[in-house]
Length: 317
Length: 317
Image (cartoon, rainbow over all chains, first blue to last red):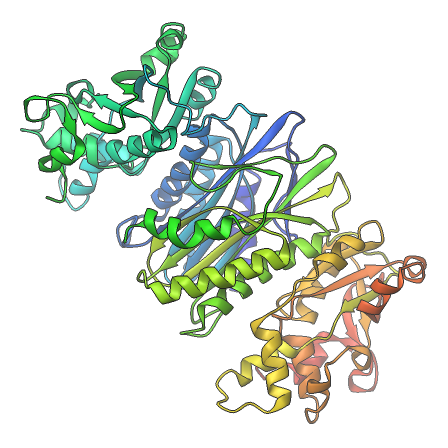
């Protein structure tokens, strides 16, 4: 089956899943066309997942499609953007019907869940790689960026951290315990914080999604804002499953692994106080932005030190 | 060297190459931000090139970067869009300094030549694959699409066809003849028809770029417009180098190979007559749109027949 038949049969139905008024022209022409509403800007991000690097070999195709779109959509959440549409470039070693069918099923489910319409794509032959670009819109000048954090702001994270990192260690487990099943579900079906991101527009001073690990991603935000911070590890929200782990293992997952696709945001204390209940409940305060550069963990070797001192937490040490 | 250092060192300078007022936020945040002017729409397309499939193994990195951006930009040309910016997802087996340096050099040159600013990207480890998404803008409702061709319209192509196809046969040649060198240059450094595409807005009834081969791409245009056509093979423009080839070889390249990134457009005869000299000189009339479906080649087995009758022209036969 040629490229055109492939696209038509499996991906075009996905393009019908989410009606997007802003999508003037969808798949099938040289380009797609999107209308951006007056007083709004286009927000976009491209992400690649490579087999054996970003997901395990022989990972189920429906889960792969969901995870890939979730990871890309999480970047829209971190900007506070309204999701609109996405493009898909998928490179496949062979056109296998069951794989394509499962992949398009997962893609349609994620497309609907996140409100992202398939706008176009490219299908090529080669080692399994999935590249997605997501498009959203924000009111002009209102996007949440990394560079707005100010000394005195509170640092918050959404949900709980570390589950997806723990899941990576459980993927090969034949009969997972209930705790392991709980964290595996979070790895297979992450939910980007799109609604939370949108509701933080005009409230948060800076935002980033946690895709590489809390400390790494928070450091990017602090660098972009030219500030520092102290984080209290004891305040980092952990799932019940992770709290059952012994020693520092849970905290290690929470600090150094990504893939949870939660948000890390900074807010002025007054804005935190004024947050609607729903947003307050979705967030946990874990630290404070400070003018002195560097990321300090409270309680590290008995006193606040820079993250270099936390090497005993590193996952690969 | 980590992903972040890689991006910073080699790709961020490329982002400085083309100043784009419409690019509110470039690389470095979760998303990039683009402003779309009032009364304009966003036009975008994603394209992947895989080593060993879309370009030869060990193909020079500077040429690869140019070709990849040219191929993507050609889709903007086919819509008549003004180029604005692009994203780059590059998957690399290893971070080799000379390769990255050559790639970013080619990318900067193409970026400048086509007026496309680097807006963001993703660098991952894996088999060599380059995915690019290009963004342009067009006045609302004015994009050139595939579905506007009408019976009686003239079919035109820009430039000459078949050179890049011939070049693929010469790539392994150690000492190319002057003719071979001429066509190799067209393969290595294609020039998408951005200015021509823009000037055809409001004049052409339909357009497509020739990336898969004239007959295949024209067929897509005819299908989208629900019409047919007769093409006169003797009118297909060939370069001097191709005209030196014996027998039907030149025509075979021109009809069945892509990679030239020329445009194939349809125009009402009155619009063709009214074209400014520059556009008329860039285009050659090769046939006529007809209401009867099917693509006929004049002179095939002594009379017009459908393209099925032209199987003796097929490159792989």
